[in-house]
Length: 181
Picture 1: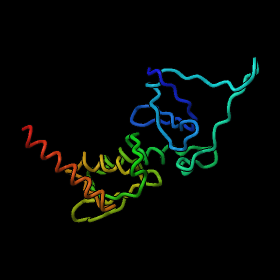
Picture 2: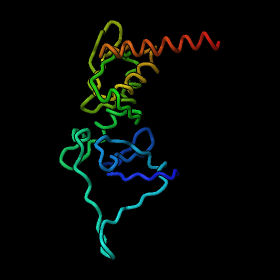
Picture 3: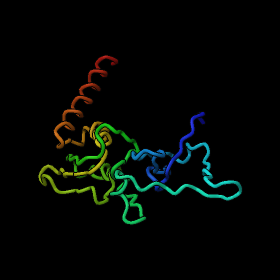
Picture 4: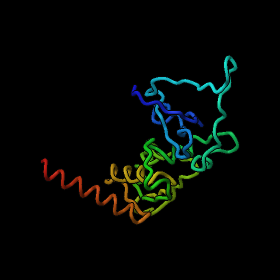
């Protein structure tokens, strides 16, 4: 409901965690963004025709960052939501390959976050300890948030900075606990 309007190029509608999203880019830009449908105040098609003749601008070519989610004109929503499980988009690190281990009994938590689409690989890690290895090709900050949130059952493996970033966040939490408790 802000006064600011955005001209968007929509590419797909998806459902994630009980919410519906539109995947789009801002006109003239290639970075994808997601918008929750229930938070969109209004939509207006832009008429590019003259007079009474209705004409609408053709959607821009699929941007490079979205192309891997398309096969022809078909959008692979499973692969997209595996890459952005929390529908949070953080530009600094972007999508990259990350790995962690988690308790086999807690694997459903990882599947709830990252799904089981092509970019997610689950393999046995250490049968004696009941851990499984999970490799995901996802937004780095989403993986960091997941590992931090579930630090008691998840251990980050790679990339190396993921281990450091999760350690820093957990240590920060412990310092805040000491301060406020």
